Image (tube, rainbow, N blue to C red):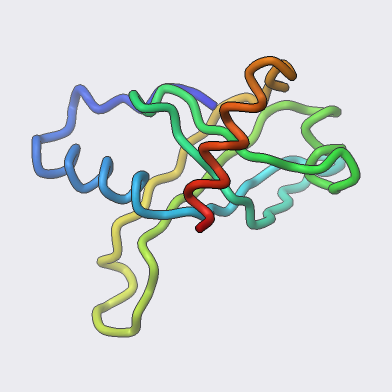
Length: 119
C-alpha cells in the first residue's frame, strides 16, 4: 500500500490518524473482481512510519486471487462504533495502493507483528 500524505494535516489530525492506525486491528480490504469492487475484512499491521500496511491473507482466499489479477486495492481503517456518538464523526482513513507479495524472509516479522496485535 502507499505512503499516507500527512504533510497537509495539522498536528491534531496527524495524532488522531496515528492513534487510529495503532489501535485498530481490522480493516476493510477492497479489491477488484472482474472489474467490480469486492470488500473483505482483514487483520492488518502498519510499518512504524505508516509507509506500508501489511495484511496476512491465504492463497485460497478470493481477495488473494483478485490481487493476483489486479494489484490495485484499498484499505479502510475505522474507529470502532460503540453507539455513543454520531457514526459520521468517527475517525477513519481510506488508503489506496497496490498490493505486493512480501518475501518469505520478511514475512516472519510481519506475522509476529500481526500476532501481537491480535492478542
